[in-house]
Image (cartoon, rainbow, N blue to C red; front, side, top):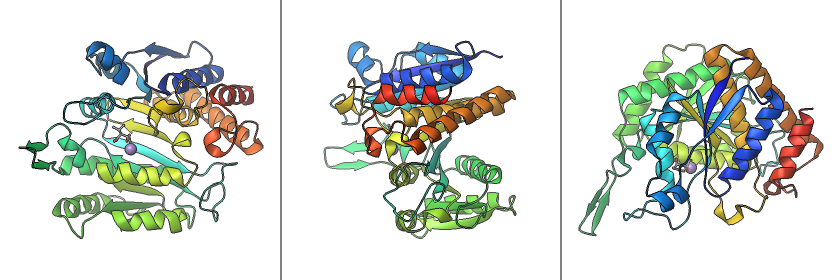
Length: 361
Ligand code: IPM
Ligand code: MN
């Protein structure tokens, strides 16, 4: 068994407890030797103590180790003079400096979970949002104009390179999936506002150029406002959605809510040389330290990490372990053996973790 080193940043709020829970589940599935978790400093609490949100030795470990596992970052009131939150800087610096250009956000209705969209059952909602993760409106982070307390601007930046690679990622992913639940068609939906802004029309045009290399995958378009209606009324139509950074940030929370919420929604931020995996939720400081947070989003992000490592290293033991963990989560939810509070149950973080470890046998 190869030994993999995971740069692990527990972070703030519920981050430490959901990270601990995930380490326990990974060790239950793979044993204690397969993965080494290098615990690293970073986040708003660390900034409050040290003045650094992402220490250089943490960044170096995230750059050089095999993958990055993150709990959550950010604390209310810990902000920069310009009003932006410090905790987010940990994440954004890692995205930009490690060039993690594809933010993969699966939206899948699991067994035992009741969607607020009553018409849909397990498997009826199963799509993946690919959020461009290094440019768009986020390119302006820390670079916007603040003028005499009267004017503030941030610029939306769309590049050919940034769009081409995230669109190719989306089409390649669609080829690995079984199509949209509604019709089994492999489909990539380009989410933009090409009708209004040239930058989005350019984004769409580059996606069209990439689509020409994938005649077996249907290309589809949806304006960012219209897609919020479609994701409620016909979520089963979607297979893979590719979107600019800010639109991807927004529609991924909407999608998450249709399949049980942020507490069950994983994410993988993937570049050519590194990847960061974390639940799509935030640090939820209001419930931190009370053992009530659901660890599911981080655990499901860790199975994404195992699959990414498996593909990268040709190590089937990791993808097999990922399948066992997903199966254990499905089993616990389907049987109601333990249901987290955000899904209407009473199970806290430890109870959910123990139930999944038991289901792993
Ligand atoms: C997300 C979060 C981040 C974002 C924050 C934590 C920087 O909302 O990952 O969706 O704005 O992208
Ligand atoms: Mn977000």
